[in-house]
Length: 189
Image 1 (tube, rainbow, N blue to C red):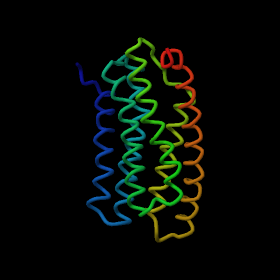
Image 2 (cartoon, rainbow, N blue to C red; image 1 turned 30 degrees about the vertical axis):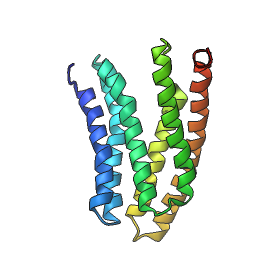
Image 3 (cartoon, one colour; image 1 turned 45 degrees about the vertical axis):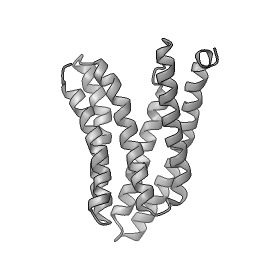
């Protein structure tokens, strides 16, 4: 196993996910939101960068293929959980977050099962858009709470980000159904 720069970036995304949670445990608002926003944004950028570098430098690896979706899910799910916890009851974020969490766990289970049956479910372009929508929405929610001194900007960011998280939840349902549909022959045999 070789630790290439793309694989190191992916591993750092996993560490950043834990760092987001640590921000909410160790810092008071709004600093917790700002710290989480910075870590989350850097981690999200590595999602794009690690794959691009791996392809450009011909450093694609089985380790990277395994770690990348785990890192994506970790940063999204841990940050959503931290946001819900920091917001008290989570408000209207709880519903789309639950959809996202359910889909990610469900698809991971389906992928694991069908892989044992020699069926590989490739990541679709729509699933990549889903991940992008999730990351932009979550980043916007973090930033909205990191700038409480500017109520207008905070409210605008929060509203746009909430709309986008609902769009991401819809994309999450569509891509989850697509993976399930593609695997039904194996699942129902």
